[in-house]
Amino acid sequence: MTAPSSASQRILALDALRGVAVAGIVGMNVLAFALPAPAYYNPLAYGGVSPPDYWVWLASFVFIEDKFRTLFAMLFGAGCLILIERAGAAPWRAHYARMAVLFLIGVAHAILLASNDVLRAYALAGCALPLLAGLSARGLVSVAIGLLGVHLMLGIVVLGAPMAMYLAGHTGSDGMLWAQRQFGHDPPTILMLLEQGREGLAERVARRSLGIPAQMTALVAALPLNLSAMALGMGLWRGGMLKGEWRTFRLQRVAGLAALVALPGLLLMAGWLVREGFAAPLVGPVALVLSAPFDMALALAYAALAMAFLTRDTGLTARLAAAGRLSLTNYLLTSVILAGVFAHWGLGLFGEVSRWQAFAIGAVPVAAMLAWSPWWVERVGQGPFERLWRAGARMLS
Image (cartoon, rainbow, N blue to C red; front, top):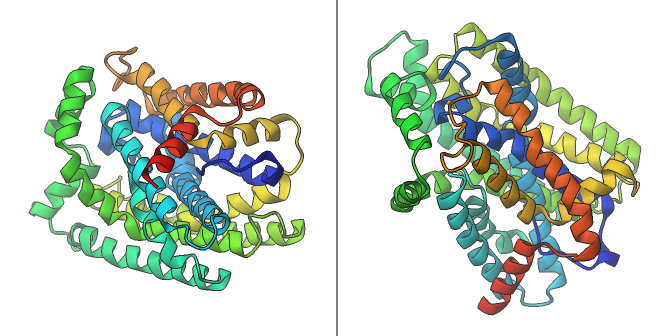
């Protein structure tokens, strides 16, 4: 997600990678729109689990959950560095103006449509990017690894106590009950979330507006991980990978090594959760903390594969590249479509579909994005929300 550059400066594979990232985000967001929050990570939290639901959870856990959010953050960091490099000697005012406008767009998005909006988190983490912009590619990658370590340590501090109690056989503590409400099947919590999912637009706006201060805690907690991914994206740009300067063999080797690290770890954690019956004290730490290094490794593999193979301006690659050029608009557009399907003021399907049905519905906004983006780019160029972002930042700076 960046303010667009001129057509002559565009890198097709990088634009297509942005399109892949936006499409992958839909695979995550559709579950947040369709099911109560604990079911986002735990397939046993709400409803029954048929074989298709189980396989959809497994595929999502291994290949989608947080991989595409991480990839999106990597590309955001690279995009910010591109603009900083092109802005001349003093780019900071324009950069902070862009972050301020993006944060406001994210607040509106979270209140009206998607409570799991990522724009606010990216804008907050983006405020630190000028401090990293002078580092070399190796320095940026080192920062990314260090921040990932910070995320792991802080996550274990916050979520490790219920997991330790569970592994020690202790039950009934406040920490265990909290984990059950957040990541398990707690009937009163599920009932409350179902009622919230069926509220009217005015009620939702009022409730989410009042909840903004509380949401800031979660946004701040996500800063190390988001900043880690952004620093990695900056390092990959500065190192030439996202510029399209690496040979195909080198990109394939990076993708293979990253996948070789990520996939066994993710499959082992998935097996652990299945064996333990998706115990809530384990679901949270695994999904939000322990899987993070593997999520980032697989996001790196996706980036390398895209830069290796999405290089020809034909067919699907061209559509993905057009979608990537409108990444902010498409991210918001997919939320509008999903809200129209699941919200009470739309078709009202929240809580009425299974996991596999929700995932299948996610193909609708992806298809819409791939259909309209080439037409818009050819005739208009910059997307409407990209224009809004640029105009708002220009006014502030």
